[in-house]
Image 1 (cartoon, rainbow, N blue to C red):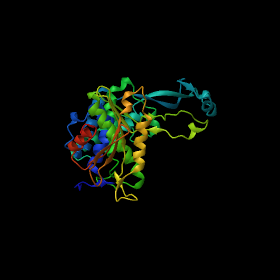
Image 2 (tube, helix red, strand yellow; image 1 turned 180 degrees about the vertical axis):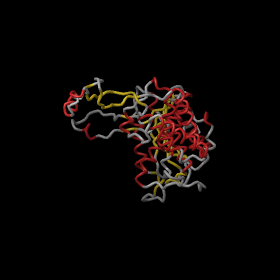
Image 3 (spheres, rainbow, N blue to C red; image 1 turned 90 degrees about the horizontal axis):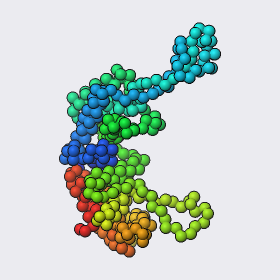
Length: 362
């Protein structure tokens, strides 16, 4: 599975970008086929930059969303709240002035700062020089309107929620978020790829999980499937001591696919490791802990009131690091599949592998 592409960890960087797109809200909102980039994942930064630039241009024509900011100012008349302390401290009343605090409309909102910072970020990794210049020009236009260039913190962004009246901003914000994510595997000043340190393994695993969930949500949701990501499964407890709730761990699945018309439920657990490890008595073996985990999920969901739970299927999905695998065993009525997906393959091949993966009739 050698690849001409540089690697982040053990995954080709072009497919890291592909996973980022699968995991993004932009992909969920518009769907993959509409952008026709599955055969050109190397052009993904240019695609995102194009979408972001178009969205910003559209918003500039129709005026950017305004927000409120707290302003403290010394005025000749009362506006908003009077700051008594500052007014008395500086003897302002004697001069016919008063210190006021009020909310003022501004374009320098966390949302607009986030978009401007994204334009700056994506302009550094796009391949098209004209597109990079376009992004920088739009950033300059935002600056001229009073939007500062510093990326807002997560705390700032958490207070700036998109409402149903902000539909025109959704595409722009989704593209901006993906622009930042695409820049993660690269240096800010160039296009040289960085190796992923050990502490980033958790990020890669979560990205893999979100990408698989995002892919199935877009591809299967219009075929009668419901996709749940991060769903909690509760233990079938018959009796318990008072303190057990404090220490008993929760079971949280990565992905659950369900199709009532086909009477099928599939629990997918993603693992960002090699599917085989060395064993005590064998040269290679499946990881027993992972099998216990998926088996527990399947059995914990069993209920006579829920027919789909009685023969639900499980999938342990790994990236194909050293080999491809697709083996299935039925344990107490539950098919469990051990599978890999080749992330160094062409995007259309990855798509085909993921679609065929959930077909337990083969």
